[in-house]
Length: 122
Image (cartoon, rainbow, N blue to C red; front, side):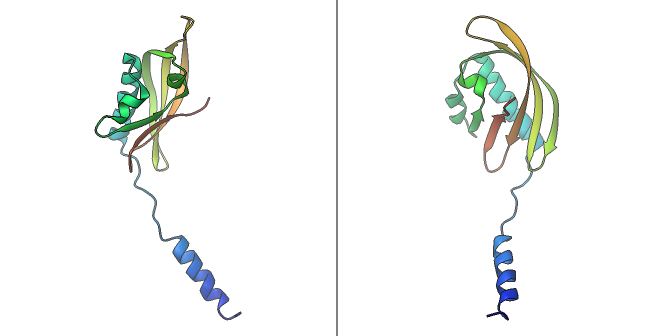
């Protein structure tokens, strides 16, 4: 059995390392997905409406979920980050009580295998 140990270790590592990482996010497609999502929020569309597009965009944004209104936005910076794409965005939010406030928010976008836009927790 001791003579099989090195062989088994190599076999386990070879099988475990067989899958490759997905391709890095396409920066133009990621920026377009983020802009489409933010434009939809600004127009008052639902999160679900983005899933009906072609291609669908899956969005997770806690402000949108809690029914805050996006008055305007500005993409401040963007960069590749690992396999994804990140953007820092200045959001002007109107709360249900009518008050407005600006927030800087970080978004992560993936483009493969599907378009996913996620607002990071602050």
